[in-house]
Length: 314
Length: 252
Ligand SMILES: [Fe+2]
Ligand SMILES: [Fe+2]
Ligand SMILES: [Fe+2]
Figure (tube, each protein chain N blue to C red):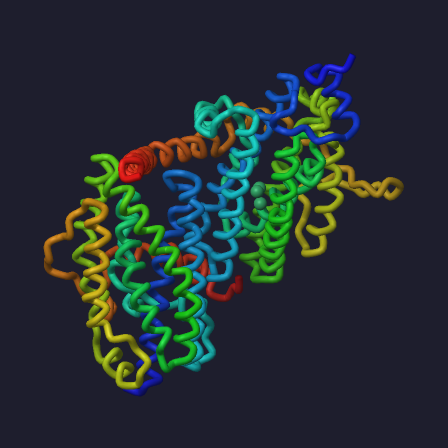
């Protein structure tokens, strides 16, 4: 017998490569996994506005300022699509924001690092958006329809961000000694954290197996990380940046780069809340959310008054 | 004064308004009361900086010394900036941001509608591009003025305070000097006398609808046409110009 509300039927749809839509049956674990992953992704877009926002008022040219503003605006827009995708699973944006602010929900740990010089804006676009794209291109084929469609839209913009970031790095490496030093400093600080963005090794990753079975995740952390490394090292070398790793090498047989071990202690320390900016990022979000409360209340009050007026005159 | 010199100053004044307000609004990134509003304010900032770029580039062309728009934006001293005092006022709370935007956008809507008819073709072209953006900025500011004025008692109070606080900087928007006089004779500049009356009317209508009071007329602050600013501008410039000043040989 075929039951549309059974987990076996659900799994067979997944195995057939079908998209799951908001109103379709899905196991509770699938729904929970998606809410966690999509909201974490949405929060990352929004929290990521802070380190880049840190340089907007100091952007060194009118063009640079416009590109950076437009990029941050894109990221905020990605946050909006993703909150909407999460809402299709039956959670409200208010709940999601509450979880972010209470620390119950995570966001990408990369944004717990500070943006210290102008080249950091280049490094974030090139490395952080670059790593995000590798992950997101893979997520375009994720099994949940609304998430997959959000990813298709987002990926187009992310590749712009990556190119614009690389352009900043290139310009600085072709610039004065000071500019080159800034670019290398940014590279030194962002390289390893960007590799950590893919998460722990497959053998140590707690969420992987269900996510792979449900085709939420289409490739493993290590596969994605390797793609990023292989694509990025030649780009760095092309503009004269040094990879901050004394022992990386190209395996001629496989065509893949091998790197030194990643410092997972640092990764877990930052996730646990002890990165340089964890407290600052969440405090900032809470501060401006609270300062905006009276504005949101006014908008609601105004709407209620005027809906009433319209009803009375109708 | 030659028409060329006057046009340079006139263009610079318009460019500086767009540049400094764009900067002020860009400070709000990730600080909006709600994500949608963060994006809306960023949009206004982007329009302003785009307009600044067009105007400052034109100013550089008129000057003819081989400078770029960036040289003009990032390498001038405070006293050489000629944006209106209202423009450089701090963002304050959201009510102050909106009140400043309302005053500016209603002014700019009237102003750029006239500038579209300017005999200076470049200014007219910039005006016709920017007027579409200004309509959106103005509508956004009016919508929020209504919501805040006629929202809760707290929002009403904050909005009235903001309108009152910024009122003394609005008189300067309508000041004219020998640059305006010269260019009005040439059919290039906009006569601000009819615009002042229309602006008063329009602002009064919006404030009334928002259940807010029109502020009493008071002493109007002045000075920007002579390079005399409030203390705010120096801080804006020290941030904005930091990299260009610290690394004068670098290109970005
Ligand atoms: Fe994004
Ligand atoms: Fe991103
Ligand atoms: Fe991005």
